[in-house]
Length: 427
Ligand SMILES: Nc1nc2c(ncn2[C@@H]2O[C@H](COP(=O)(O)OP(=O)(O)OP(=O)(O)O)[C@@H](O)[C@H]2O)c(=O)[nH]1
Ligand SMILES: [Mg+2]
Image (cartoon, rainbow, N blue to C red; front, side, top):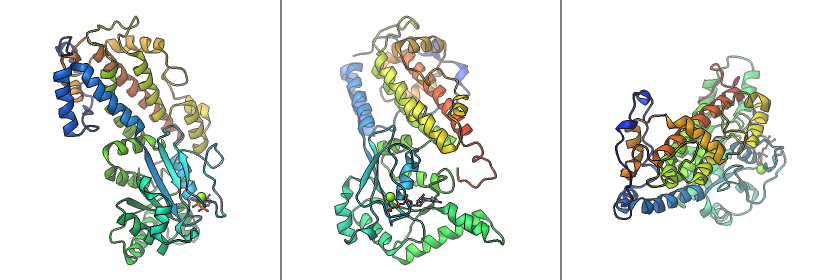
């Protein structure tokens, strides 16, 4: 057995976190079966055995690929959508080419700037390639895609519906996205007469749905978006639909890859990252070691540093992320940086930085409920008060909280006027 230190948590139980929302983060990356195995591994092989399983899971999380196919007729806004999803503007380095003339002829993969396992595939519209839907999908190597986005900037055409039917026949999911909604609303607005944005949106959505039904798609969902203002209209509904359909780990990868467009997205990312905290804390903890903050954390510092860098990257707080966000939002990068208060952004994360942080969290208490919810899968006696696990667990929780709060402030400043409650948005 690997349990070396006391399981007494009373000393750590405190009222100070009583009002904090207690969220369970342990189980969602694991199936029931995996959890059972984790427990039995712990009982037979102790924490070292558990570490092997956790390491495998963390590696799986880091290595899981997400391939998103984006297709539709020429000029529909495929490349623009891909750029917007990657938080890029057309003239940013690595952006997909956007033009009014036909540009996409071959499938082209565009990696996410921070998560190289996430790739958006810009597929030529089926109308631009002279083979039937079934051949088109084979030619486009459909198997590697997790789902398809079919984009149109007007009514969906026969080619779109043919393709959707074929995608369905092959067992993949597709989502209809109606782009350039900003243009539709603008021309209606200029047309004079009564204008109600919400009513217009309902009308366009209904029209797209009924045309797709006529073309033999029984219950289509159509999401109205503007690639120029991705945070508006139906973008959050599209995300909700995708999150509901994707399997657990892919869903997590998708959420972490989303551009920081509003506080909801940042909060979702924080929740996903929180699920990793107990795993990273277990991996970095040293059995039986009593941590002395500031001198030695008695933990595997490289795991902690790696975790913090990952949190920072996923929350869009690297310098390059801030520069891109500032550009996209039309703000100066100094304006965004002005609301960052954490020393964890803008510099290198070193063992020294970690040790200084550890002093701050040493006195933080953790409610027994919160801890229990997080460590239920293993219920190990190693996770007791004063253990190295508890210190790293507290530290990672505090760091994640701090980084997420900073990311929230950045996104609020970036999209301040757009988040005006008078603006139409489905956030
Ligand atoms: N107003 C507005 N313009 C858009 C939107 N999406 C794309 N555009 C413009 O529409 C034109 C075509 O966009 P692309 O992203 O190049 O379209 P595409 O589907 O990749 O086109 P091909 O590569 O030729 O198949 C460009 O001028 C874009 O700037 C949008 O949501 N709103
Ligand atoms: Mg294109």
